[in-house]
Amino acid sequence: MVIHMLAPMEEVVGYKFIKADSFPRLHAWVKHFSEHPVIKDNVPDYTKVVDFLKIRREFYRNSQQNS
Image (cartoon, rainbow, N blue to C red; front, top):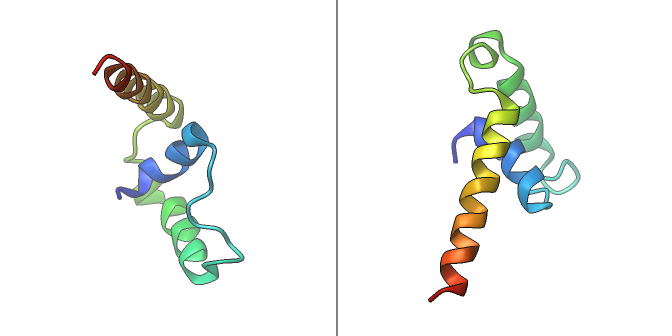
């Protein structure tokens, strides 16, 4: 999973994939990695990613209902 998609995906589906209490080292790594200036300056806008994922989720839900 691409790092910039994790937090928006968690927001869209309403589930925390990497919990600090379950995966403390991985959670810390993700947090530090995503806060690094090189990464922070080169990922898409958070809101745009959330909007994109919401549209895709709705598309897949509708396609499953129509099948």
